[in-house]
Image 1 (cartoon, rainbow, N blue to C red):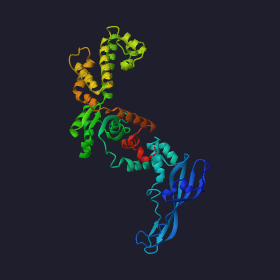
Image 2 (image 1 turned 60 degrees about the horizontal axis):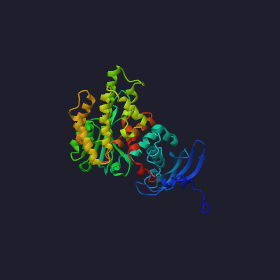
Image 3 (image 1 turned 60 degrees about the vertical axis):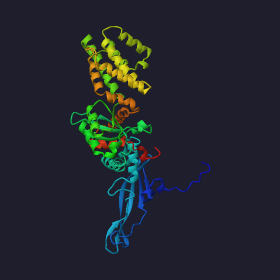
Image 4 (image 1 turned 135 degrees about the vertical axis):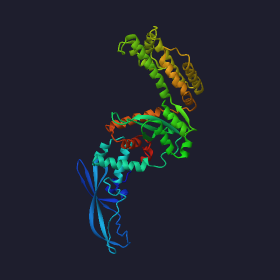
Length: 435
């Protein structure tokens, strides 16, 4: 710092108004706000109708919310000169489109600050409106319109997508209306190791027709480029993919496959609990105390957990739970096998073993076997496409849950979809290269 040459302060450059075609002529500072008086730099004195030179007539003032400094709301009072043509008599005012859109109440720098805050810093709309010193509706309408124009409606947003994930998402917890939407995720960066998953779109409803219609609306070249579609066990997504993307490979991701086995284990535990005690589990019941330990991988069990399971399976009254637990552990072992080829063999053996010849008492295993046999091709496809999983889709669902909590809930689905796309659409590098 000893060699730095300081120059005279330039408030116009400091506040970024030179980019807006404005120049600061005065300031008024208070602890709660700042007001900057500005003028338009370009004279704009030539008539737009006949081309004759105009003469100054009067001035008008335009008020714009600007990017806050130190979270102090900043307002621009822009003095705009009006001219009257000496030829045709037409009256016009100086062009301020560099500073703000026509009829806008927020400057372009203020909109950029708000959009970065919304997308990159995950600020609430209320906090953005407070920083700009405008109403919530003004901030919301302006920011969403800017985000849609600059980011969501980008024609190249869907370019390069080769791996797609599809899942349902509950966007509101009310009794009125449809609560679920279908979310479509780009998993290409995850499989290539180049970045995080991003939200491509969100569709009202969760059905085969909803996903099929969305795929049909894409151009043929885009559909031909899709190699893999990761999904849960919902057959509607499978059918829609088969009909619209016949060359793509469908993968039932490990998260949902293991969850099916985990649900079978829980159902078996509850059934045995009811049969032995005639009631739900209580904190001192062995089966209830071991409910979480049963879902822990065998290679991750602590000595205390191992002892608890040995005590649980010591007698014959819990033999059905022990058998179902064994199926669950075999599934986990297949997915955790470092050798993909060996893991596929283990999974194939597991599916074959529970698809036929299972004792009638193991009703949950029989139901699981029917499901896995029906979707065996999709389950085994995971081992041929390593890294293809709906896990990132579930992670994005978690971020959407955070968004809904941040906004204290949503009522308008269109508004929610726009906010969700900005929140999880992978727009960060384009908004600010340094972030």
